Image 1 (cartoon, rainbow, N blue to C red):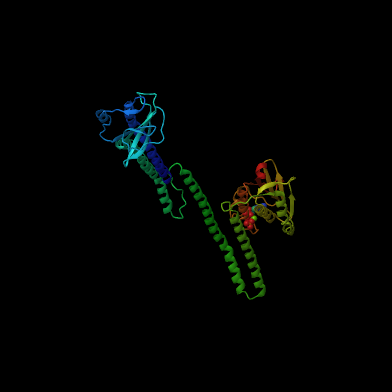
Image 2 (tube, rainbow, N blue to C red):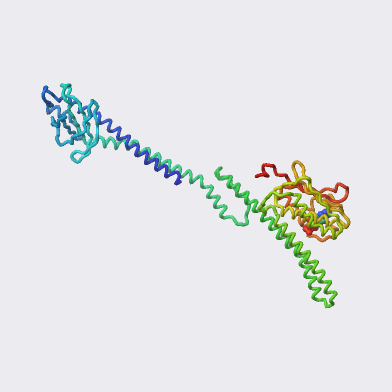
Length: 455
Ligand SMILES: Nc1ncnc2c1ncn2[C@@H]1O[C@H](COP(=O)(O)OP(=O)(O)OP(=O)(O)O)[C@@H](O)[C@H]1O
Ligand SMILES: [Mg+2]
């Protein structure tokens, strides 16, 4: 409102000042004509006998000439030598004389009252060859003031009214336009912090719709994160309950046992349970850390060949212990990707861990990097027992494990792999190994375009 009403008031002031000067000019030009006529009439009565000036105006003519009901009119006729020919000698004489036939007009004060004066400097018509005389005709401003007041009222009043009405209309229009916003503010203010359903924006102004849309969008995302965290906490509590109960049972057993070898056995079980619990906790943390809704990704260029080689090398002792042949095949050229090398390493660790864990001793596990036009592929294959086709989707779900596996596991590894792939816009495929046995996990990363890469 301030942005509209302040300029509007300034326009109003400029308008009043402008109108005042225009009206004054109009009033003056109307009445100046009369003063000029009187001055020219007086000039007709200035005489010259060849030697000196005279002035000849009968009393009656003078009365008719200066007949004015409203204003007092005075005059003064002087020669250039300063001699007064006729009129009121107290009228202030103008020093600067104008020569020529044009009459000049100016405002002055006479006898304590503001007057308008017409000044004519010209040769008397009866003797055009003589010196010129100066005729001043002064008139009080009564008529002009009255005329100006009438004009001002007629001109300014409608304008003031117009601007006031415009102000009121704008005021009401803006207030009305903002009313839906106030309603919206009320609706959002009254909401419970648990209510993340979209705000209904049926009658908000069009300019505000994108804002409401953006807020709704944000709420949807916050809702998704909250939902994830809720499920995560519920799942975690559920999953932790069993191993913690097992831990407690083993502990109780050990406490009750007096035989040293039995205590040793119980402690052995306790250790295994604690290890399982520790794995579950670290996998849970990893799952939470890589949840795409929670991650602010800090992508950097890295070489997939190097990252995969380093991750695979770390598994060599483990594979050796289980008598598994762990191989690595890099692609010919470096594979530049945009992403987070730490998370990609975590992904490779989970895939290689599975391959070694679920492949029997004497088997083969190979990590391979391939690159084609559009994507870079990270391929982890083994020759262990195949994952049944109907299970190939479900193993990526949290806590889903195949029945009948004797290996320990928390069921989170592939869910983590899936999260990290999503974070990198990568696709995961699981196929039979090409040589007819085992499983092949392929993660395909999009290759950043050259210019994107430089940026
Ligand atoms: N290479 C593989 N060969 C055979 N079965 C596999 C392979 N990878 C995964 N699986 C099956 O998929 C299931 C889910 O794997 P995932 O890595 O998600 O969980 P996990 O290995 O059981 O637990 P962890 O979170 O400790 O890795 C496994 O329990 C296993 O049955
Ligand atoms: Mg696993």
